[in-house]
Length: 182
Image 1 (cartoon, rainbow, N blue to C red):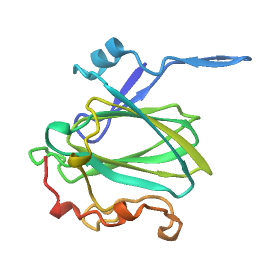
Image 2 (image 1 turned 180 degrees about the horizontal axis):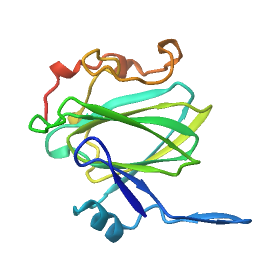
Image 3 (image 1 turned 120 degrees about the vertical axis):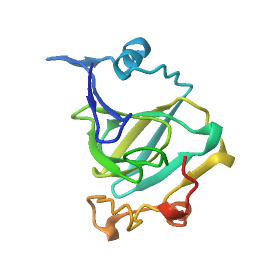
Image 4 (image 1 turned 90 degrees about the vertical axis):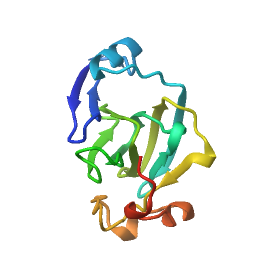
């Protein structure tokens, strides 16, 4: 397993070791002791989630507030997405900044997003199966988000605006300046 620092403090790209031959491949997608040693933290994941989406579906930018904040380890099992993390930690040197990276079933990369970040993704392939681990349980009363096209963040979602598909809930999220920062 190889770990690469991302431009936002605490976020890491993880490239698992892939062993392949004429039969297919094998990879260890997660090993708690190795993972924690690589990122230098003690993360205990308690919930696994999975979503299936079609091309143009944009989910995000979401986060959990307060004691229900979540760190996430995300990956794509099938398809290709653009994954986006926004630093919403008020005391961070990268506060208000974002970065994006492509995750796919071809590159097998994973992304670790610590607590204090909003997260979202858009599907670039015809379909995508997206999986993620969370270090805290989902709590509906603590869910929050940021409007995906907030001009202050200026996120490049790669696809044309007319090709994006969002939930009604995500279309009504507040702008970055209006959220309760962590």
